[in-house]
Length: 194
Image 1: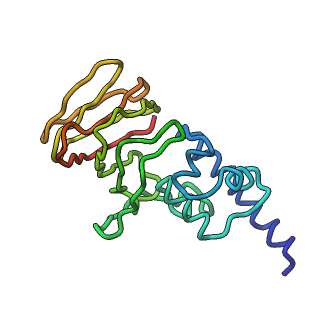
Image 2: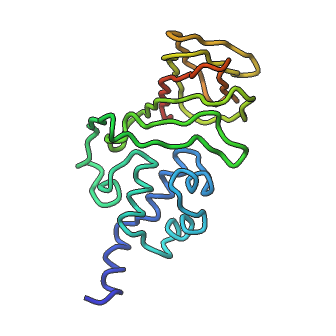
């Protein structure tokens, strides 16, 4: 089979368009997606524009960043169903980072085995007591503090959360987090897409 025949076959799946749609749906810039996948913004741009077809390992990195399976890019939407068990040793660990200066936490995806979930759940380790960069995104956000003390600034107001406390808020307003004190602070963070 010629490489052009293979390219034509792959073009029919519109992988680049699907990657772009996922990125825009999540409100990410190319550089932000790059920080989550380890791929350069230039390569992601070429993939989205259909100028290159990603290898399966590259596409898998992209799929993991969006909590979708490879079938998202190849199967009809009506045949995909959400179910997944994420084992402790299978959790995907992602550093919280943005080009504006970074997030004060690292997080592990608690739903990485679920393809196309309606929400995302993370175990967050709030590692910094320093002032955090503010950010905002669409959807809804919920945080449950497992241990330690977290300072949440939302809509210009600061709130202190202790172990056992939880908060639900509209993340379209600027918010930031920081650990209070020297003790570890961990929490469950759930985000819902709009």
